[in-house]
Length: 392
Image (cartoon, rainbow, N blue to C red; front, top):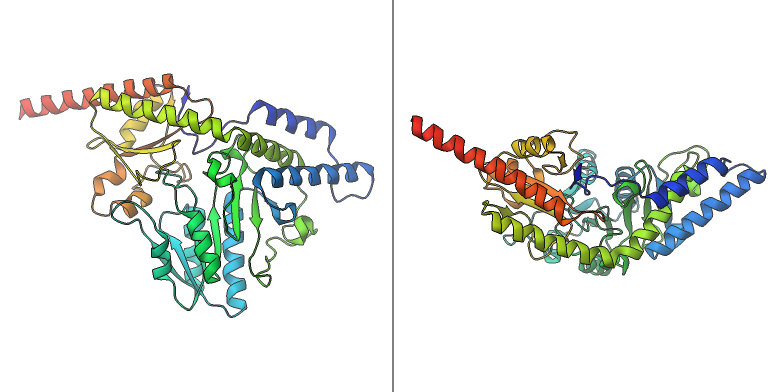
């Protein structure tokens, strides 16, 4: 199998698996219990939280463990929107139009609940800029929402500048950093926001474990409880902690951050090789998204005249895994909402584009196999076209 869909998920790395297995075997106590094995589990939980905090460059008290980034996105956005309205600050949000569904659908639900949301689309150059957020803001605006790296086209969004502008204006800022954490060194160098999220399965930890970092600029913007019950996670997200997965998550993040620089160099080399091979193959293609601000590990490509579904079938038959967009689209191939935002007048592009994404184990041989299958598909399409025209 050749795997080129790391933006969808990643395998659990051996060191992380070993940590999880050790925890499951020897650290089964409930961290809320008062006897010795409970206290040991509580100490292990505290150590994992501190380990993750060091890797992220944040305070341990600002980390809340969740089931993943979808839960964390829902929690952060809804809590801040409602708390700001409760304080009388306003009910208007500004959000990029290329967010993950776990952000977009929350915003759409908030609209049904009386909030106003303005969506910022990419400009003619494919960029989303700070001045567009500023121009869309009103005296009722309380918060901005913008992802760090788009999950479908790999565009890098200006979260550093947005953070500075949002703080200066007194807005809360939520950043979905799922596709950036552990990949982009500039993320770990620090940026300003009131909340950001991560999910373990994007950086070689298991699925079903993630976190929210909440660090408000306004002390009155307290985080509201998501799940009530036993009082875990500072009484804001009740439920017995998944200690083994939390320990695996913290180790995976620490390793990912330590390797981020080396991975960037590796991804840069793979990217150069990918486009060199595509150009040599003489297969017509175009890159999607913001070419000037592009993560080197996610690439969206338009192959005009070839349906994405045909490419996926061809690749699957050859044992090559990639996708037509976000893997969170319930396993279906539909018109890309992200590409509609970038290219509103190019309908064919919405369903003739595919995404490939690199990971730490990706090699040039994987790209060679991808190109070989593309050439076979392209040649078969050309043969069919010539036969149809000959018969006509």
